[in-house]
Image 1 (cartoon, one colour):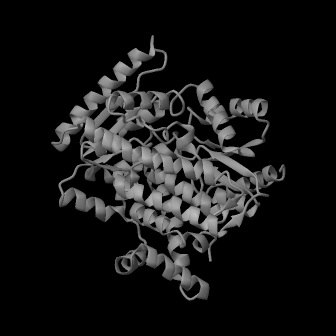
Image 2: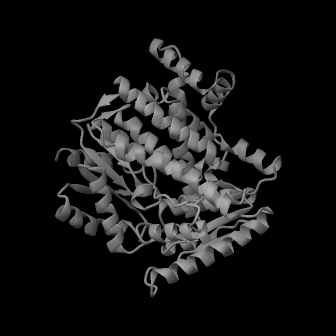
Image 3: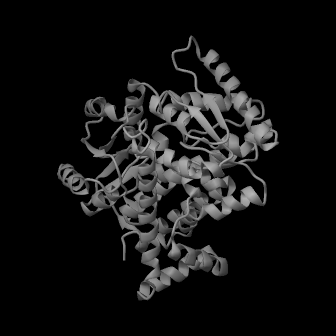
Amino acid sequence: MSIYADDVISFPSVLKMSYNFLMGRDYLKRKKTRERKKLISVALGFPDLVYAVGGVPVFPIRLEKFKLPALLALGSAKSVLGWNLTSKVLDLARQFDVLKLVDKILDEVINTINDKYNQMYEIGVKNEGLKELCFGINALYGMHATQGKNLDADLNFALRCGEWNYFSESINTEDQIWVDIPPKDLENREQAVDIMVNNLKNAIDRLENLTGNIVSDESLKKQFRIGNQIKRYYKTILHDFSSSDFFPCNPATFAEILALLTITFQDYNSNAQRYLENISQLVKEIRQRVKKGVGMDVSGMPKLLFTPMFSGWDPKVHEIIYELNGRIIYADWDIFGLLEEIPVSNRSDPLENYAKFLLNASNKGLGCDKENLTRSYVEKAKELKVDGIIFNQVFGCSSISNLYSSIREAINEEIEIPATVIKFKKIGENIIEVKDSLDHFIKQF
């Protein structure tokens, strides 16, 4: 059995999240054709406006057709048994080693996601203007090149990253909706907030014309409340459970769960309420396992922050680290400020609160200056109480990957923990070299 199958089948919430992510194509087609909902492309964790206007946010790879016969069988089982009973049946079958489908499900999920990402990347690099850019941008371009015809619009938040904005301008969807984020060097904070609010209003006007629906203060607050609850559970998993000396599963499985959250957080699997229920159930399942002593003592294993991974990373890394007796934490959205809650008090303006949230995130992480981004990495390493950092130097990324020297220097000065760098261009490349490098790094602990 794979190291993932042995644990993941005991988490019905993880099975549901995986199924909703990979089998989203049929769900999204029904939303578009039967319910006449507008499918709007999003990335980097900004789906709130789409939900507030009654649209369906989509991380475009979910429109791809995944060949997953075992996962389809799992879907059939859950239709008859329900997710919780399906999980129990799989767990029982595992004990008697009679159901090879269990191992096949998880292997299919992992391998198929990697293969599809690489397919999308290869489409992107055929564009001469993009091929020297990072894996994430090329993969996103590939997603839009193959699925743009099924999208009604693309919601872009213009970050201070020239490569990201170049990609956004390159994709061909029916309707481009831009939200510009003002630079931090404006005369004062109030001016920046006013500009941000105005930019959001312009985007909302476009979304309302597209969907025929109205964005109200109440629809914004409703979505922010759901998003805030999701973020709260997400941070509980990151800050409470990952800081523990006892994991509810082996560390490679835990890293796989964090990776799944990183990917699905971008659009909440196109159903925010369902996603909230799933992540709430995940927290409950983790607590129950820990309380019962089901899991693994990880007190002797160094805890390593791996970052960034949202723009491309090789999932094989957390398996390698586990084999070397370490454990990895993925926390990109927390580092970049996207897990901060948006105030929803009765007296406050929800659009102004959202504007402040976006400004704070842009000045803390994605697209911000070298000094502040370095500070974000250092502060999060302190909060998560990690023993070391693995910096993922992504080929073609000029906004983050050139920060390694300054980050390592700041870490050495302030928290005195070791850090290393591995280079990434494409999933599956240079695995032997990466393993040798990580082996040398782990020996320091």
